[in-house]
Image (cartoon, rainbow, N blue to C red; front, top):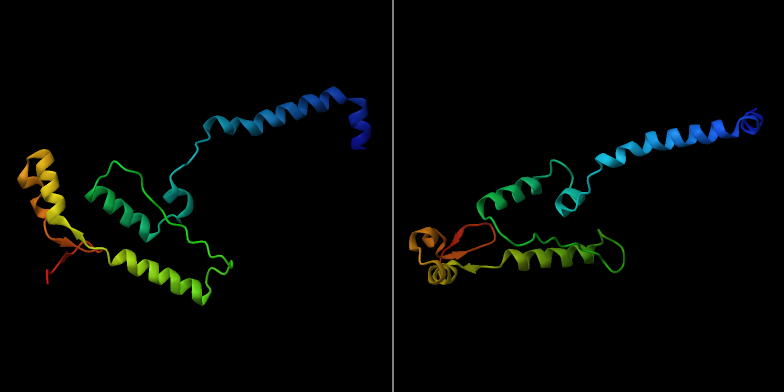
Length: 134
């Protein structure tokens, strides 16, 4: 039946097809491309998004955000060896300690505003806590 209808009214089917394509394509005008990795790859409502918002509000930066993607060579994401390597990498990152006193001294040399940066003096660990100097 459809073949006969198409053969009898081909221009009607062409026009109907064009109208349907235009209706479906009308949403392209409101399409917005997302390029922020945290919005593309992190689930909505994840704790890491709240933490990222806190970091952005506390330490505004002019640089780009970095994201590490761990791709195992053997393809076994949750393999014991891959998880061990990931934990070692995480431990290395968390063991970084920043000498805030040196950073403050460098900033004071640039800006000459002592009171602005003085609260960042000391040694700072990954969790944002002041590390006791040994």
